[in-house]
Structures are given as C-alpha cells and as structure tokens.
Image 1 (tube, rainbow, N blue to C red):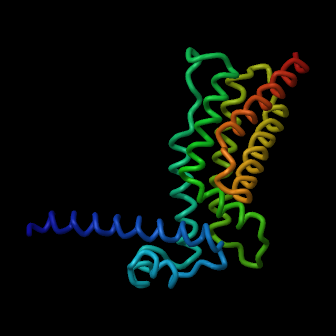
Image 2: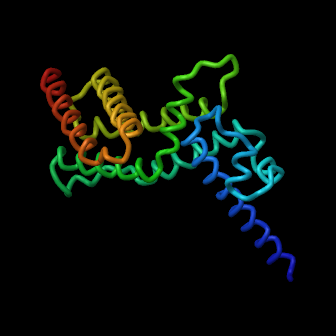
Image 3: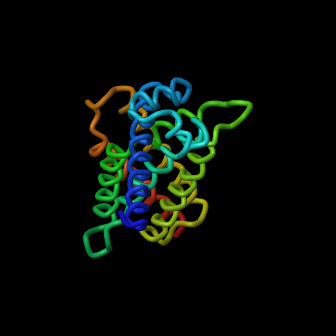
Length: 209
C-alpha cells in the first residue's frame, strides 16, 4: 500500500474511533451524569480499549468537554434566522424557534451535560463546565445579534434583558422535557416562547420610542 494511502486510512480510522468514543460518552453521561461516567464505562460501550480513549483525550474531563463542544457545534450549525422576505418578524422568529427545538432534540448533549456541570460547585472546576460556559456565551451573542435586527428600536439594556429571558425560557423548557420525557414536544413550546419574546420585545420597543 502506498504511504499516502496508509496515512489516509490511519487518519480515517482515527476520526472514526474518536466519533465512536464521543457517541458512547454522550450516551453514558446522559444516563449517569458526570460523576457516573468513567473511562472504563466508555471503553465498554464503544468497544475500544481505554488506551485508545486516552490517545484521543487526556482524561474524562477532556472527553466530556469534547462531547459538549461537538454537540454545540452540531446545534449551532442549524441555528439561523429566516430572511426578511420569508414573512413577518413573528413568523420568522417562530420558524427559528421551531428549528432551535428540533436541533436541540437532535443534539441535546451540550445543554444536558452543561446544565449538570453549571449547577455544581467544585473546588477544581471541570473543563467541561468551562467549555459549556464558553459555548453558552456564543449562544448568548448569537441571540443578542438577532434581536436588534428584528427590533431596531430596542436599546442595549432591553437587548440584554430579552437575551437573558430567551435563554432562561429555553433552559426551562428543555429541563421540563428532561424531567417529563419524550411526551413533551419542544417544538410547539419553543414556538410559544418565541411569541412571548416577540410580544415582550414589541412592548419594550414601544416604551423606548
């Protein structure tokens, strides 16, 4: 086999094994939480030896951080505001909210694990918690960019308030689904939340003009 082909195969195998490890870690962490996740459990779940996991990741904390990053990247790639010509402001944010809910159901790991870690306090902060707070800042910035585009009359304070309200509502709906199970459909709930954000934004914009 030519050397270049061998390198490509090795690289492809490395990417595949990394994805298998991340998939297994996401499943276990989603079921058992941070404390209940171990390298041994991930190894058994993905069928790869612990040495392979340590080749990709320094330790459990590094692995959980990678799970959060991958899930967030998958979620963020689907987040977009429909263009202006597709409908009214309310229709656009409702469509965006529905897309957010669907993508969150497809890639929930960053929020599920992140909220677990964010609510804990440890003497040594896990890297996964720090990563979650970073990606959360990215999500906050994305929302803060969209709101002034939709409601130009909002001042900076109103944008910050609505951004916090939007994220808090999404967190609460996600937690409700985690507690209740798949009987909770996030899509109509996120659409309703979008309508409430729209109404709040409209009233705040009216007060500032």
